[in-house]
Image (cartoon, rainbow, N blue to C red):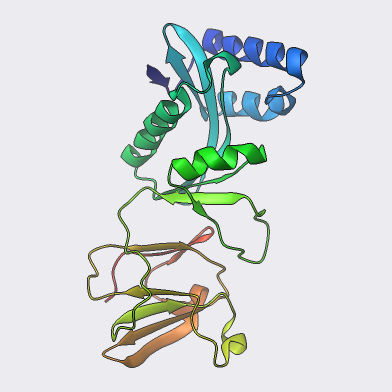
Length: 229
């Protein structure tokens, strides 16, 4: 099993042929998105997956800031339900990790693919107020500081509201920052309220986009903080 991160035209045509065949037989598959696939190939954003000498899968992707968006991923109909899709994805994920991307984001289409992406440990993308459909998921590619539900004196809190809206409402997400060796990575809206508390005292509070003057902490659709200083 081999991941081809820079397939040649012959391999590209092989993918096209079985996509056409699938579409003609079942009216399914991603041949209807051929313009996306072709553009991905031209821009070197197309992976293919070789198994027993055949290209049985492909993946289209692009990057935004420091994370990757998977546009399309498909396995040849005859090779499904053999755990090959899982192997293909893991090889692609390893490539993205080596390239130092911090996360992967995608939209589950068709809806039936949601089960697969959950098995790949993808997390539901919260409603950030615009653009992202309900079946959007993401997965960190780095070890992160996970959310906590315990009360703590040193914490970072994020509301899914703007500062003027929070009133007495509790934060939607919270991180214990006693161990600041792991970065915080979480989907967010740049206008949401972020609060830093140290020793039980609020040190800083503002919209995500204004929270830090020294470091950019909003990367595309993600809050990303490497260390709390």
